[in-house]
Amino acid sequence: MNGENRYHAILGGGPCFIVHPSDTAPMLVALEALANVSGPDGDRMVALERFFALPEESLERENVLRPGEIVTEVLLPPPGATQRSSYRKVRERGAWDFALVSVALSVRFEGETVAGARVVFGGVAPIPWRSREAENVLRGKHIGADVARRAAEAATSDAAPLEQNGYKVPLLQGALEESLLAL
Image (cartoon, rainbow, N blue to C red; front, side, top):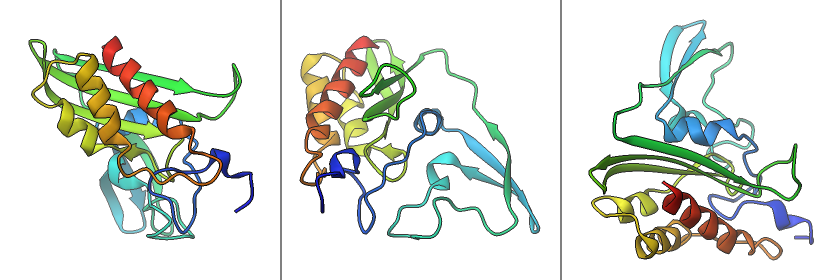
């Protein structure tokens, strides 16, 4: 590896360490969006969470579209009364730049307790990366500094940075902690 791997994946990498560049996709995954896909065999619905393909699944394809298929619409479920969501993007330059890390959150509350959460990252993996580890830490808890810190640590427990991108681990942890505390 050369020194140019500072922008590469820290989660889900191998055999390719690209990062998914979308700002929209992580939030759509967090919000449980569905894609209507049309093609020669008819229509089918695909959860956006399952739409993107890791390099270990296919080096030739970044999604599950079959030959001749196209996404015709993206559907979002209506937000719940106790749902709060946010998107945070950390980038090198002030405008028109890919995320170094991004955090998409969708959290349902019962009072001040987390009833359910979806935590999805961008800029750190070949696909929008859902962190069930962080979600498990949050479920049933009141979000305070300690819970936010533990969720951030859990989210990066499987991180495998390359030689030049280890900075993404604490950057992602900090972005997640700040995003959670801002809810």
